[in-house]
Each structure stands twice: as structure tokens, then as C-alpha cells.
Amino acid sequence: ASVAGAMLMVASSHYASFFISLELMSIPVYGLLAYTYQRSQSLEAGIKYLVLSATASAMLLMGMAYIYAYTGSLSFYDSVQALFGAIKQPMVLLGLALIIFAVAFKLSLAPFHKWTPDVYAGAPAPMATFLATAAKVATIGLFVRYLLASGAIMVNSLVTVLTIIAVLSILVGNLLAVRQVNLKRILGYSSIAHFGYLLIALISMTYASLGSVTVYVVTYVLTTIGAFGAVALMSSPYNNVDEAQSLADYRGLFWRRPVLTATLTVMMLSLAGIPLTAGFIGKFLVVMAAVTTQHWFLAAMIIVGSGIGLYYYLRVMVVMYMTPPETPRIDADAHWGQKVGGLMVLAAAALVIILGIYPDPMINLALKAEILSPLHFMLSQQQ
Image 1: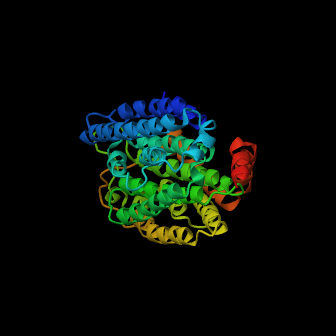
Image 2: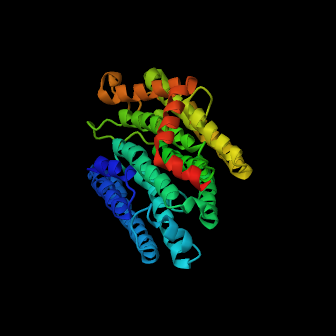
Image 3: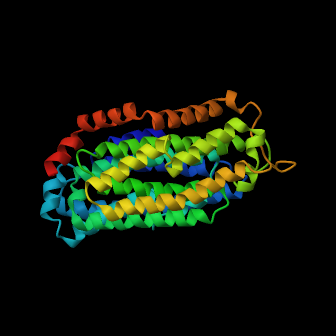
């Protein structure tokens, strides 16, 4: 049901389908987060996401109501001209701002990020993977369409708001991750920073750089599936031990599970944006988009954020190669690579390396999708 909602989201061009598909995607997630109810953390994650997501939905509906009151249309495309005519109206600007804030919550952008580390840490590892990938990709897909189709990306005051949110997300996500010793929380704060980078690509968008958003999303999804997948493989549901969340649980993993360690190492390098990984290609294209549009400050913020990120990604890697404890508290299954989850993680790691070395097919596919999209024509017309 949630995937059906996500697929409807990326095809929405109407406020009604926007809201209905968002709720169809979100409501099953509340139950899935709290599914392992024997763990108090899991119940806490489900309740937190339920309450905060409901607040974001209320903000979204209020924003839509303000815009509809002035434009008289619920379609993104029909309301463009009316929106530009009424853009100086405080209520229209407030409506657009409320919609952006609601989407920022769903993407866990600062300062709407407070739920992310708690929910990621409390959720079952496969569910955290779904929330970090499918749910966020659908939201960013719809957000790109909305910003371009409604013309909101051309409003200077809203671009300023998006710039502030992007810079805050990069700083907050990276700085708070530095202090964490819980791997799922590190990945949660890391996702805040990554969507800050992605927002910079949106702010710096031209009809020539729309593909950079697509490429970044693809690289982020592959890397996140691999990283959370490794956590899921370490956290067997068939014993009564808690999930492998603490970095201490990964100490000396290389000496017991060298292939799994190599996979997680590749994911950490990709998240850090190290060359020869897919993450580097995505980050490079975002920096190029910022430089092309002469957003020098934003380009500098990406570099600063990446520098801070190196510390906590490398720390995870160092822990895995340390001297192992005599009796590990938790360990992956001996035949993890023969199971569906293990094969998925290995496939994601292989793609991260292949796309990092030879990214042309991915970039060409993103450019083709961009050219075929009606948004490409609309953005070039607006420019």
C-alpha cells in the first residue's frame, strides 16, 4: 500500500492527488515502524512518526487551502499564472511556505529533522531502509515537480527560505552525526545532510542540470540500501538480542565477516563522496550545478559538509578493522551472502562501484528522462 502511494506521488500534478498519495504512503509506515512492538523503541518510533507526520499533513492542507482560496484551482499547472499574479499576497506566500515546510518534514530537512534519529534508531532495520529510500525518493520526486510546475522555484523569497533550510540541514546533519556512537543514528543524521546537498541542486537548477538531481537520488538510494542492509543482516530477527546499532557491535567485524565489512566500507566511502564510488559522482554533479549558477557559498557549504562527514564515516570504518572482542555480542549469519537480503546488499555494493567508475549510462539515462519530461520544457520556458 505504501509503495502504491509512493508511485502515485511521483505522478501527481494536482493538490488532491498530492495529499491523498502522501497519506497513502505514510499511514502504512506508522504500523510498520511499530511492528516489532516487543521492543519499546519500535513503539516509540511509530508513535513519534505518527504524531509529527500528522502535524506536517495539517500544515500541508493549510498551505493548500491558502493557495486555493486565491487561485481557485487545485492543479499545479492551472494555478501558475494566477499564482504569479497573487504572489505578492501574504496569504499565498504563507501557503507556499507551509507546503515547503511540510515537505521538509517528510524529507527530514533541518529544522524539521528532530524525528529522524529516533525513528531510524527505533524502527526495524528493513523498515528504516524503506523510510530512508522509497519514501524520501517519492517525496523529492513530487517536490521537484511541484516547485517547477507551480513556478514556486522562481519566487526569490521562497528560494531564500530553501537556501536557509539547505545550509541548516548540511550543518546540523553533519555536526550532530559527529557525536553519535549508534550506527543507525549516524545514518539518520547523514540523510539530513544528504538531502541538504540535494536541495542545493534544486536551488541551482537550470534546464541543463535537472539530471543532477536524478543522479544524486540514484546514488543515495543505492548507498543507503547497502548501508542499512548491512545493519539488517547483522540484526537477526531470530534471536532475542537487540539490533546491531552501537558501533561497538561492529568492532573487529572484518576478522569475522570480511565480505560484509568490505560492503559496508564501500557504502561509507560512497556516503563520504570518495572517488571511484557512485556517491562521488552524485556530489560532483551537485557541486557543478551550484558552480554553474554561480552559487559559490552553497558550493562551499557542500565542501565543508563533506569534510565534516569524512570524520564520522571513517570512524565507522576504523572500528570494523580493530581488534575483535573475544565473544562478539551479535554477528551476521554465516551464510548471509546466500540469502535474498545478502544478495541485494552485494548487488547494491557492486552498482556503487560500477557507477563510480563508469557513470555514463546512469548520467545519459537521467538526461534522457529529463528531456522527455514536460518539466524540462517548462523550466526552459521559465528561464
